[in-house]
Image 1: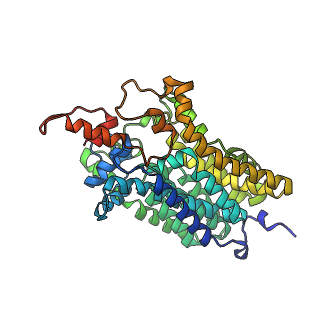
Image 2 (image 1 turned 180 degrees about the vertical axis):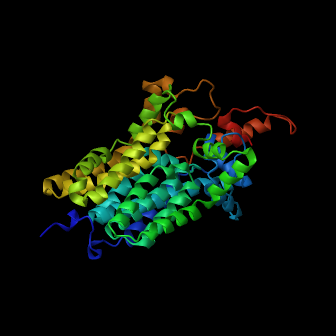
Image 3 (image 1 turned 90 degrees about the vertical axis):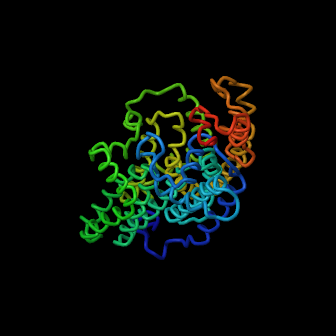
Length: 440
């Protein structure tokens, strides 16, 4: 009898229930990130999100363009103002952790469906939860975590769609993809893959042809807020082309298109990427990519390969100071491949099973231990790498960047209070971008 795991369309009876798994991963991750999130004001972009959410700024106070508007995220952040307890900066930081928890729960569901093993799905979700960049971004106000929540929901629906094609799943996928565009332009990257899968299913008559038009309508509904802003911008500047360029690139067109050269911060970004791979995620993903087509069939393997390649290639040639943050969706796709690879190795016998679980357990211990030791090691071994040209008072650069937990990191708030206490009420402060929004 043919192994059911090798069939491209798994029968419904073979799908494991993911309700308990989903809730367990969601709660565990939310608790971890809630306990370790920053309690107050943040530096840089996180401070900007706190400032904009406080004022309900759906555009962007500045000249960075629509690509950095993130209107759906800012709207959600503005609503947090009405929570009667605590202050908005804390709630917005906590909101990032909730987004990452949702993303991890979605990812666990995907891994369970692909492998038929909830234990593997939980193990992969736990490993990604403790990886450096996911944990780091989940503790400060950031849009990337909710963008990842949308992307992993799309992958989940894509798997369900391929295995049992129905038009409601396609419409759900299109709607979430459209909503994702109103969160972050990241949502555009996987769109060609979804379109190709939908067209292939329609051509093979596994989906009605009219569902493609219905899906386009669902996408427009989801993206309506952002598309409306593009239309308003076009009316303001008198050019649809300029408005679309602002929405796609902002002021970063050369970097988005890969035309900007690599800069001096590339070494630091590579180090941050490496800190996410001090585990068995990458080797398991390599195994998973190798056996993917044989285990899942080509109709699922090709979209997963394509999604992983698109995310890795985009982030790898996007040379910006915080390039390491753009690899977040890449880690999610590596996790999907790692789940398939973990299943393949475990099925080879007891010795392989023991080795894989031992390596996984060692990974969970090693990651937080290294994060705790990394600041002192960096200051001792490469002191020049953890220093700024202009030092920020109260901020320990090595600890800020290398240690993902931020519950005891309050340097931005201390700096802002100290600066404001030293000036008269009607004074003017000229601030560089890093502390600007914390002061504002």
